[in-house]
View 1 (spheres, helix red, strand yellow):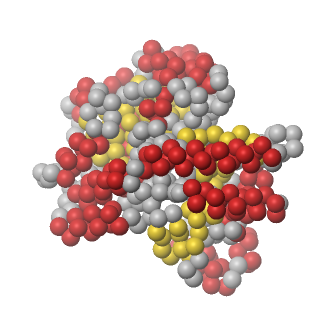
View 2: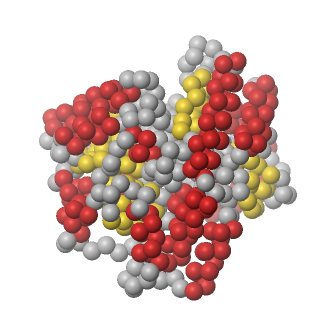
View 3: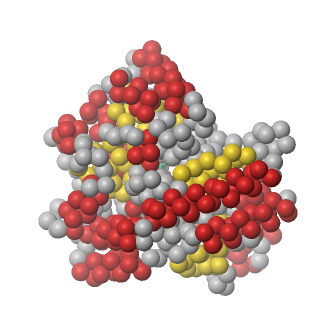
Amino acid sequence: MTMVNAFDPARVADFAEDEAALIARRQRLLGPAYRLFYAHPVQVARAEGVWLYGRNGEAYLDAYNNVASVGHSHPHVVAALARQAATLNTHTRYITEGILDYAERLLATMPASISNVMFTCTGSEANDLALRVAKAVTGGTGVIVTENAYHGVTDLLAQMSPSLGPSAPISSMVRMVAAPTGLADAGAVLARNVGEAIDDMAAHGIRPAALLVDTIFSSDGVFADPAGFLAPAVEAIRRAGGIFIADEVQPGFGRTGAGMWGFARHGLTPDIVTMGKPMGDGHPMAAMAARPEHLEAFGRNVRYFNTFGGNPVSCAVGMAVLDVIEAEALIANSRDVGAFFKGELEALAAVDGRVGAVRGAGLFIGVDIVDAEGAPDGAAAAEIVNGLRERRVLISATGRRGHSLKIRPPMVFSQQNVELFMDRLRETLASL
Ligand code: PMP
């Protein structure tokens, strides 16, 4: 991803000797493709709940990491992981019950038509598999994504991830549509853009396979409203013979505060759902859920085996994550704390011209930072992200111009955490 708040290696001389040495060692060993967050990178040693702790025990409020969805190192998840690891860990070519129990519980959260699930280790693998299924089902090859989408790390998905920037070329089979407008007409505009992309494919002899979107549009800048705006675009792709893949890697597992899945806010039943990040509270696991008739076309002649995907430890972890979401009522917490958070940010926007539109659903919030003319101000957003980091609060920025603050804490975030966040944000704004 084009990173707006990435650490600049030229600044390493500004840091303490041991910190600078670690950064240099990292660069020597991991090579040049890795990026660190923040002008002053953060070194972390342990974590718990919504807190990350540095090497000297200093606490950072985590308002960014949706992977640790039910809180960092949740004891119920850790215990399930350790118990299963001490009992058995193999793969899906033996009969084990854990994967069936987990598949049943996961599929129970989906629309009835989506009744098969296939397990992977990463969101990229889930999207890659979804595209193979889409091509087999439709006979098409064309894929529509949004203009600053990110869908994964494989060769195929990097070619449908414009947020990686101009050095990662987009496939000739892919058409990009503008990010949603955030306005009342978002549905009509998106559907029109998708229609034009379909026409352009036809003009180039490309048959559409899929519309692939992150249902909270996180790398485009976080677009949640008006709920339902995605539906006309989905109708358009289906009319053209393609299918709809809901990438739930970001919004899935309750984050939007309106049920388990981002697509539900749009009143949609996808053809394929991909999921990952928050699924294992940090344990690497992901999946693709689909309609059985679609997998019939795909799986009849091709076998599927993923060495680690769906292993007993991952399934035990996934189950424990679902336990915690239920036991701690985290979907309701996302809804209520998210609404309070948005309200506080909107109140700040009313008195500070640098804070523009506040968007989002539940604990997934985007905040535009704008200049005196109201134009996107990516440089100021980066200063805010780094200013918060200096005050030990962690967020990032997103969107094509990098001007939208991306706020996406573990779902156990409390009203008190929001109040601390707002104090630190006001301090940061006052210091600029
Ligand atoms: N889809 C979306 C919307 C994502 O945000 C990401 C990861 N940032 C992926 C897919 C890829 O997931 P992974 O990194 O687990 O391969």
